[in-house]
Structure formats: C-alpha cells, structure tokens
Length: 310
Length: 310
Image (tube, rainbow over all chains, first blue to last red; front, side, top):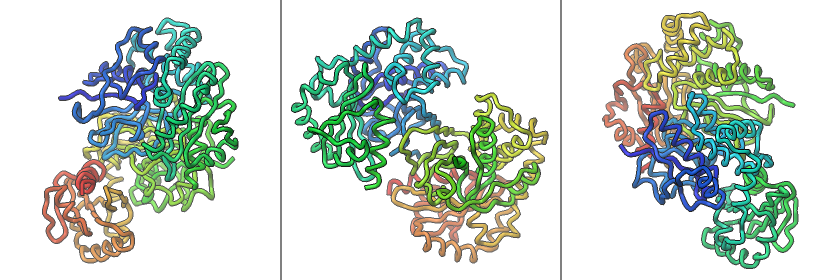
C-alpha cells in the first residue's frame, strides 16, 4: 500500500510546512502510513525554524497521483492552491483555517476547519483529543507556525486559542516565544537577497472571486521601502504574471512586521474594485493599508465582497 | 441582535431535526443566542421521537434572510439542500457528515465534518470537548438520530463511534436502544397512509454529479411491495418531477428495514449511468440492490463516479 501524502499549499509558508510535519507525526503515532511532503521551495523563515529545531525538510514533489492515491490537505482546501493533479487522487482529510471554496469530495471525509489563526493550533487540539504526546522538536515547529501566521500574536487573525497553544508549545519546546519569534520573523523578512520574481512568488495565492481571478502575494519586511525601491521592476514582473495567468487583479501586500501595517502595490483591470473594497485611492499604483497585516482576514474578504457583486 | 438560526437540510429527517435541536442546546449552554428551525415538514419517524421525549418541534421557516444574518448548518453543506436564500446570509458554522460540495464561504468558519454515520455523533463529541452536560431529552433525540441514520446500526455508514455514542446516549436517556429504535423505525416506515407525492418528497435530495442533475429519494418500509404496488402512479409523478426540475436522473430507493436491502425505481435520460454504476440491468425500471441501505455511502458515490466521467 502506498503512503498517504500530507501537504499544505503551493508557495509553502511556515504553517504549511510545519503543520504537514506535525500532522504526519500525529497520524504516524496513530498507526497510519503517511509522509509529509511539500509543493515548492521553502522560504527563509521556514528554513530558519527547521534548522533551529533540527528537523529535516519534507521532500519536494511536483505532482501527487504518481506517488499515491490518498492525500491529506493541511492549511488549504482550494483546488488551485493545491497540487496540479489533486483531482486525480482522493482527499481523505482536511485540517485548515481558511475559507472553504473550490473544494468538493465524492464521499464524506474528516474535515476540521476552524476560524483560528493557524493550522498548528487545530493540530494541537487533535493531539490532545487523541491523548498523544507532542515531541519537543514538533512543538517547536508548531510554535513557529503560530508565530509566523500571527506575526508574533499581533495579527487580527490571532485568537486566544492560538496564544494559549503557543504558550504551551513554547514550554514543551523549551524556548522563549518572543525572542525566538522575532529572530525567526527577521530571518524571513530579509528582502535584500531576494529577486523581484522571488518577492512576488514566495507567498502568493490565487483566488476566484465572483467571475474574477485575483492573485494576492505578500512579503514581510522590516521596512516596506526596501521593497518599493524596486517598484518599476516589480510592476514589469506583475504585468507579465497578469498576462500569463489571465489575472483580473494582482495585489502585492508589503507588510511591515515592526509597525504592523502594509503597503499594497495593485495592478490589473480590476484596480477600481480594490479602491472600492478598501476605500483608498491608489497613488502611483500603491496605497497604505493602516493596520492591515492579514491577507486572509483583512484583504481577501473585502475584495471578495466587492468582486462577487460585479 | 437577531438570533443565529440553526437548521438542517430540506426534507428534514430525524438527524437533521434532532441535531439542530441538540446543537441549539449546546450553543445556548455556551452563551450564544440561537434558535433551531426547520426547512419543511417532519416525517412520522421524527414526530414519533419528538413525542416520545416530549420535545417541541422546531419552528418551520421558508426563507432565512428575513429572520437573521447568521446561520449554522447541521447535517448538510450543499447549497441546493439548504434554504433557498442561503447565499444572502453568513454561514458561521457547519456540523455535518456528508460529502463537501457546492459550498463556499467568504472567510474562515468553524467547519466540523467527519466520516461518521450521524451528525449527532459529532455533536456529542463537541458537548464533551466543552465539558457540557447533555440533558436527558436531548440525549434521547440524539440517540434517535443515530438509530435513524444507521437503521439500528445496520447501515454501512455506521461506525464504531456511532455505536459507542448511541450506547452512552441511551443510558442518559434511560431507554433500551433496540426496542425503542425498532418502534421508532416502524413509525417512519408506515407507507400506507402516505400519498405518492409524499413518498417521493419526504426524504429526497438533489445532487450535481458532473454535468448532470440527479435526484435521489428514499423511503423506509417493512416490505418494498407495499410501495411498488403503486408503481404506475409513482412513475407518472417521477416523470413530472423530472420535467419540472430539469433532472437527468431520478432514483427512488425503497429500503427494506427488516431485510436491509433496497429496490430502486429509476427514470430519466441517464438510466444507463445507473446500470453502469450498479452493474445491474433495470427490469421494468426497477432493480434490486442487494445490501444497499445507504444513499450517502452506497448510492451517491458510484453514481457520482460514473456521471462525472461522462
């Protein structure tokens, strides 16, 4: 029997990678034959976390159907964020904390989606419900996932459950959440070594909103100007992506992890929808979004609302 | 602030009604402002259960948006099985045990779908996770839901978790599951007093399978011949439904609750898909389906597989 593969979304972030590893540990403890894998390159933040807790990176794979018949999705459910050939395999479980869309199954599955800040917070509950022990290094990775998704507990997506879970995981992992967390976020926020292509693809997701296709990329920085100094180059590349992927809108969210707000660089046919959604006029294709740090909670819903009604 | 409404699918069955009542009790215990309601008439089995445990029936409603902005779905997630104006309100939670399809949210929600035999089994877990007490009469209704969905634990959808939950609920409710359960099932299986229209609509669901629209109605009997004696009248009515609803296929599953198998009466343009899915030739539009009692596990998946590939 082939192994059930467990993976998160394309352009993997720290929650996607660490939740796949943690859930593979959990399922293995329950006697299942599983392997955590990843769809794409890891970012600097995730690499920092894996190195710190000395855990091996999951194997990268491209397509899944040649490896297995059954998969478990963590940290995503939308088909276009998953493996290209996801419709050729059976999804047996979903553990996620995002909106539900473009997802369909032939039969009933185990689907655990909760409105918390991080998939790892849900996985911690499932460890407890099954009375399993969380290994020290796995606790460190789950803590890293919560810190990453919550920007050290400052994102509006962060719930009391995430904070409580992180506190307990930090104790198991034997680290100080704040000092470890800031080091990890800074490791991911070093934009100087990244190409324009990397900035736009490392954490990018495509969403179907009404009849429109929107891509939203996000990058964390300690100063958005480090990224905006390359605005012309960025716009050239974004316009290429719009053409190649037939996008109606591209929103590049440049988040300041120290100030906890963002600058958006917005291109495409539907920029007026962006202006309507955020009640902000674009100046030279950019707008400052005060207090906005969460794509999921602060960018996707207002854009979806406007574009679904057009 | 208006109450959050909690309801199951159209053509409500015992699990849909009893799970709505139970989840409303659970949420009320947690301090939420909720009300269980129902989309349509209750069947004889559900009425028997409510009378037995002396619980008032949920209020019937037609559309939801005039009553509330927020709803919780139990025992279903597919849009076409829900309130007609479901897209005008916000779904905040889903507790279900069916396949996921035609369901989309703008933001993350609490979604608890598990491959068990009954929604009430999942709700029992949530009571326990929140350390709440299940009132005696609510336990009786949850037990009724499990007995109904599992045909007294004989359906292939019934899991060890359902059996265990039912055992504990019977103790709380103070009834013998087997003798109470058979009385309840028989109360629902009395077809003599039902019109042909009622037989075809009391437990009917529409499914989108590939490019095709299939309606599957089911009725429990102690002898399928009690229903088939009205075959001509049934066919006339089914053909009217096919025309009115633009259906590609109508499958009427007449289940023998004593023998635990079914006879299917099948009409529509795609009857060949039915024959392919079940490897059974139709004779006079009917086929005996040995051991088939579960629409969800034994009828929907093979039909979906065949029709999705056409």
